[in-house]
Length: 173
Ligand SMILES: [Fe+2]
Image 1 (cartoon, rainbow, N blue to C red):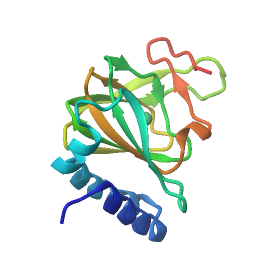
Image 2 (tube, helix red, strand yellow; image 1 turned 45 degrees about the vertical axis):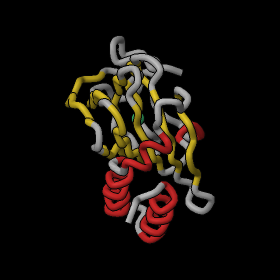
Image 3 (cartoon, rainbow, N blue to C red; image 1 turned 60 degrees about the horizontal axis):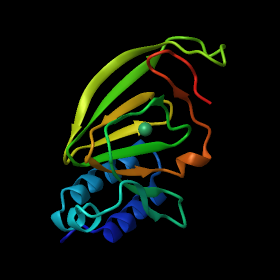
């Protein structure tokens, strides 16, 4: 059976309703792998004419999880950031995302500066989905024209989150 955005969202709702913890999110991650590898889904939501930037494709009215599609208009490196008290699944649809994960070495007492060390650096390739929990600091490099699908447990923009310039350690407001 084809995996569509609608069947994915129905499955994710059923899974997360019964298990919103790591095991449930892992089951959603595997469903998302099937979705982003489905040619019809990719053609419908990531064809060459879709707008650049983020597009909100679905918000679940009951549980609040969100599905965003993203097409990069130019190369971009994000600041290091976390996902507050939520989680995110990044599913690479086209090209790749370079992920860098960090350990925070300071004790958080300085409101303006942090000290980070790189923990790992790797590429999420087309067809792969990575899970990023709450306080796990990471930054992304996305080349122009890469496309990805992001599923988050909630609307991240409404949650307090940490953003840090990974080059200087400055905490961004
Ligand atoms: Fe993120």
